[in-house]
Amino acid sequence: MTAIATGGDLRATGPLALPGSGIAGVAAGGLILASILFNAALSILNAWVVPLNGALFTAVQGMLLAAALLVGVASGGDMRARWIAVLWCMLLWWLFLSVLRQSLIPKSLGDIATFPIFAMLGGVLRHRTITRMVIAVQALVLVVGLWEAVDPPGYARLLNVASYYTNTRGISEGEFWSEFEGLYLNSVRPVGRLFLPQLNIHRVSSLFLEPVSLGNWTVVIAIILTLFWSRLSWAERIFLFASNAALLVLCDGRFAALGIMSVVGAVTAARWLPRSLPMLFPAFVLGGLVIARRLGALPSGGDTLTGRLAKSLAYFERMTLEQAMGLVDPVPGWSFDSGWTYFSMTQSFIGILLFWIALVFMMPKSAPLGRQLVYGITAFFALNMPISNSFISIKAAAMLFALYGSLMRDAISHTTVAAPQK
Image 1 (cartoon, rainbow, N blue to C red):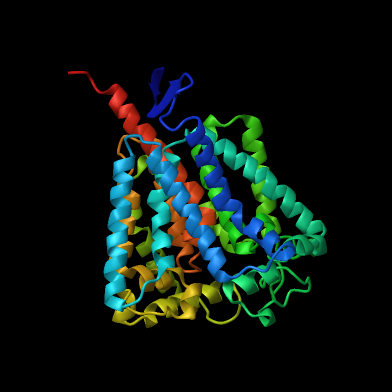
Image 2 (cartoon, one colour):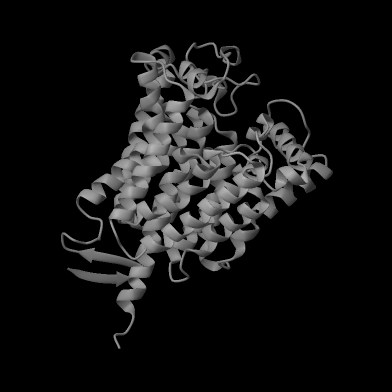
């Protein structure tokens, strides 16, 4: 096997290009795809085979994380020890908080463990393999999304999203007020659509079951498209750009549109900016919202973007010190609409800081693509924090973290190959 290092990217030739090629590579790719699509599969199972419950949903997600961890550990490689150490520290921190609040909350561990587990799993794959997976998923999401837009009753019959969320998330049937029975509760906004209202369609969810999650996916695609623009063929560029624009309109992603513009700018500018700047992104967002409110540009009330931002800021400010240190259980339901409030209550301010430090600084300095990815991920997370806790959902984060691990491995392998022999 020969290795060719170019521009910070290690390209290996031969059948054994990576330690995790073969069975491990197939397993890694399958688990990354499963992390994105398992909710749709469970929804169909719930609609047609047997009613599910929250415990089963949690168990399936836990099994996905466990399987991803097993494949990542078994595949070997230089990165394994680092990610296991990060995961171990997260486990210790979770146990420490659990002792203080005298309650175990498995979900709070799963929220942060997704990072090291899927980054380690991504180290099994070349980033080109991951981008091909993204293109395949994007095509499937687009086809299902167009079908949902054209035939909402047919989509609802197959997946019955309302029943799935009622059974597995504890949402009452009365909260689902869409004109199409079986769709997600906010598939129609009281104020109507923002993009192309003349289409007269609901907010599409496709395989992500929720319009917000589909919007998050469009931001993930924007990060990957910007990051690998020069490495993609023209056909791939055109497809990803056009399909993403279509999905953005279909889900009517008002905040996703802002997210796309922000991450494209962040990924593009990252090559000229300091490595440490993403540490300040959450503070920039918080400060910007405070200033906007002082200027009267953030009116409260209503299911509008400004209304939700104002509400999230108010929730963040009303936290007690005990809540901010992650010492309260159960976490109040109102925190779910304010990502930074929820994250603070489940991980504590200290936990958030440590998580952010790992996210920003674990990527080697010698990884130009890695730095751009870090800018994109942190900009995406920081912008989502005021709106919801969906930014750490496995549906959106797993693919980004896998790409993080792949680029990190490439950078370290390139450094090893390029180092002079003594």
